[in-house]
Image (cartoon, rainbow, N blue to C red; front, side):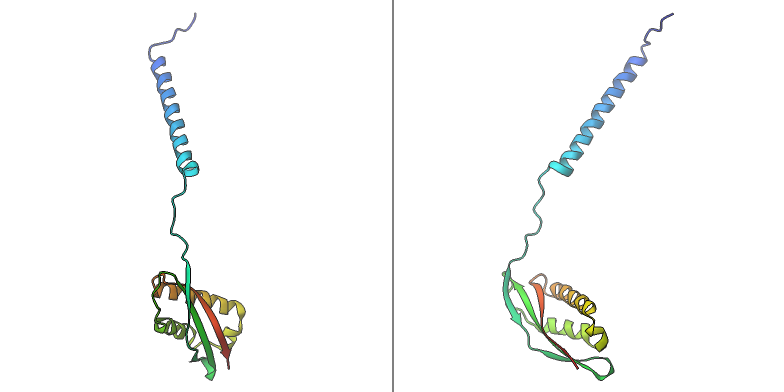
Length: 139
């Protein structure tokens, strides 16, 4: 006895083929969008402008010690002349009350500089692209 194809078997095979083709097209479309599509241009890198050097300030540290620190702000080309008062305020806030031992640790000092740079960039709404510590003396 031979089996003959029933009418129900043919539509099932057809549906499977259609689903396989749709799945293949979906995978191809996803591959195009994720891999082959050109990358959208992000924000362009800021172009360095003027460097504004601020006057050194003296801060009180813990245990009666002092810190003399001076910073310079690397502005972007689009930035107008920067008022250093916000940067100095952030510097005072960041370093006041710390210990000499804490500031003597190179890794801790780098971390504090990175935090200060991030805060200053936020305060100046992207007009300041970098921060330089030009003087750093503890006593």
